[in-house]
Image 1 (tube, rainbow, N blue to C red):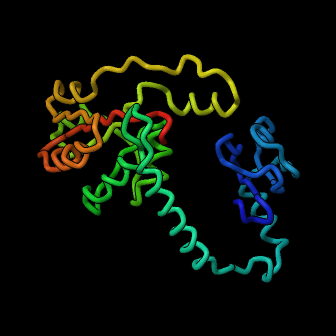
Image 2: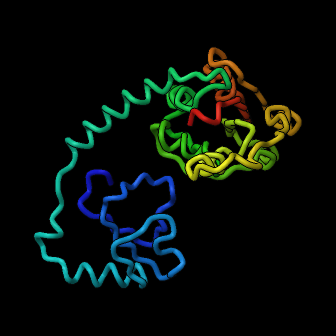
Length: 231
């Protein structure tokens, strides 16, 4: 988006963490007037059905305007830059827990290539999307996995707060308010359900814990105590 000439948002309200520069021209298409300009001001709001509007736009564009541009070399360059950035983030340490970059550097090396990764909602989903270089979707139910003897490994990031909400409060320059949590021991919960539960508080134990969980014949849960600021 940072290199684009124009942003056309179809049915998306442009969340306040999308990182769109203020000077980028934006066209937003949505049938709900409450969504238009909700988080970002737009240059051209269009109230309409996304499909109908897209078809109408496509019918007005010429073949030249619809021509694809080969961005593969640019994508490769940016991928290299991002890989270097991830390596730097693995060195981040505030003394308050393991950083997310290190966790998701470890997992792709250890999980099978055809693994289906389950991701819950929150900062863990952001971190997974940033750092885990694989394909995955999300859903989880540990008790059901135990009931049916499903060989599922669950890696849980425990930062003891609603980290995504805290981040939004900081971004809005508000006080961080009512986001701290008093969590149970999720690893103990896994054990009580009949699965394998492991808690990780030190980076040096991470690889061994994930390896043990992956080798376990049945549901396993690795509870990683993470720093909410290092996502």
